[in-house]
Length: 489
Image (cartoon, rainbow, N blue to C red; front, top):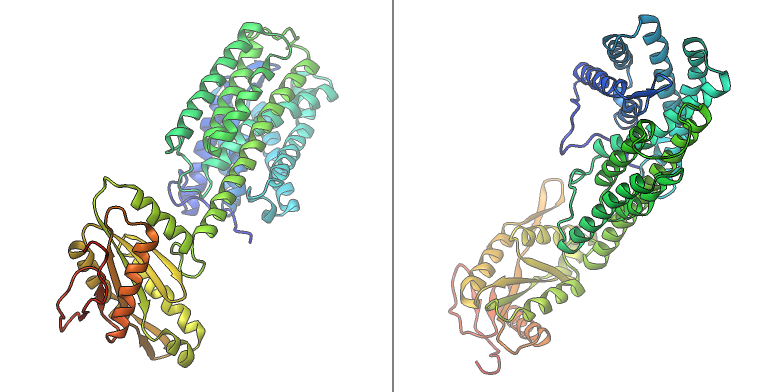
């Protein structure tokens, strides 16, 4: 299902209040323009120009910001940056009108494609992003051909090609960063993985990216910018989208600056409009490739996590399913030096009667309410099937195993599930508890606690039975006398 692109609630550099939002966007763009102006190395055009890509990214994600005030303040930010750098007012108005036309064309392409195809949740969404980039670059190039001819006395076609390549490479570099920065992912800024094995791979990939950049300088040649491609793709696979976008931005930005300055021996004529456009388009291809791999990898990662969750969790209660709980139990038994633990088995009393009298939707709500109560314990818990649940409690049976069982019993008694307006149904559970002993496997421990559970049900329900220790009856929390004692007890 399509979910609209919304600003992140974890951290967002742009406020939600409309006037403040437009003002922050204007100030941000002015700063980005000043940064780009410092990289005017060839043809009086900036080698890097992040402002257009960030404005387009903001308007794509924060669609409510697309208002006249935002465009007015954005244009003012563009023009002021040029005026502060010494440009004439006429030149500043002409060049920045071209910038705004390009962003507008990108938004038109976005609307034509459809927001539902721009969620970056499917591999084909990368094609849509590239189409938006190309539309924005084409719009700017059309205006740039006119501006280049009159302001810089350039040939119409050469001006169009140079402008198109410059805009497209900058969109390819900076738009992924803007989209990742404003995405709703709460972990978007996490650079290194929490998994030590993955983190080590990330260090290797990053080190080789730095080494390949050095090789690009050392060997040179027209194909030098392609030296970084394998390592950039590796980084796109092992890093999250924001980190991958940052690494691609840093690498490609350096290539765009180092090439014209002669730090990389490319053996091409940067004063030739054709060679300069070809160089920029080559860098764009490198960046787009890394972006596509990053998006595809992120889609795979999230799909894999979702499938893993579906395979290990009960769809109704969101607790571990039987297989996942048994895996957790087996893993706990394998931790032989971690001390004793107890297994609690729970069964909802008279659950069939609830379904028969109130219907299965009410029965489902009962299961969900019990699952929420169990989840609040913070323990490993799962739904083993039907109305049967289980928990793992660290420590001996007497304490805290029995104390936990008593608190669960009391918490369940307070549950009220709405049946109809003004009426509700309460529930109780029967609990069987068994303590693991060295040498015991998961199957025998489960059998012991399950047998204790049936002892509790035979004794009248709404009570606890132990499979190992005789426990006194209690008026407030009745405990059935044990019917089973484990071998060696």
